[in-house]
Length: 199
Image 1 (spheres, helix red, strand yellow):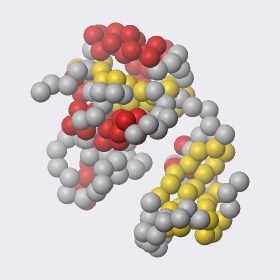
Image 2 (image 1 turned 135 degrees about the vertical axis):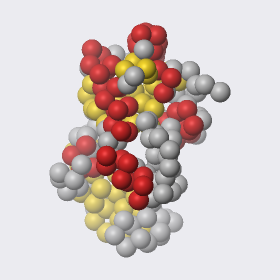
Image 3 (image 1 turned 180 degrees about the horizontal axis):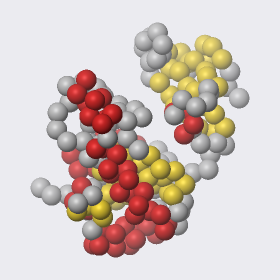
Image 4 (image 1 turned 30 degrees about the horizontal axis):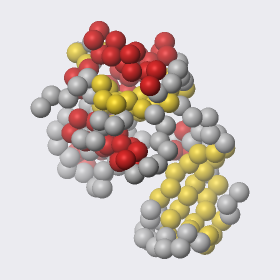
């Protein structure tokens, strides 16, 4: 079955079409979490690496449902954000994208699946098949702080610990390795602070 060119966040449940990241976000929405509104641009929206006229029109028609911008434009490959492979840092993300720059950003994120580094990452993990990702267009937030949470300690591997690292504002420089975050370690069973502080 061919996926529509554009999926709403309520339709992004099948990772074969929406990709892993979008499917995970859709599961959070179904679970009642407050997820910033998004849509997904699937592979059928593209011809020769660019958006078709019909897809561009469909995106423009869907944008009022998620806001006027700016937008976060993010990859969502089939194997991305899965139980076995994260693809962390392998595919492109564009932040604070204005409405007039959206089509170019969507195409750039889609094409980031063709980079040599992505191929090497996949080959090293025995992942076969093409990697061209679907693309999430999501309302951009302006957070007081943002970061990453690990369900296991990334240094020791301990599964009874949750490690949170955050910085003021957006977390793009943190996840890009440009800055160190403020880190706190929590007990996974109780949520009790084990190390660091919560500010």
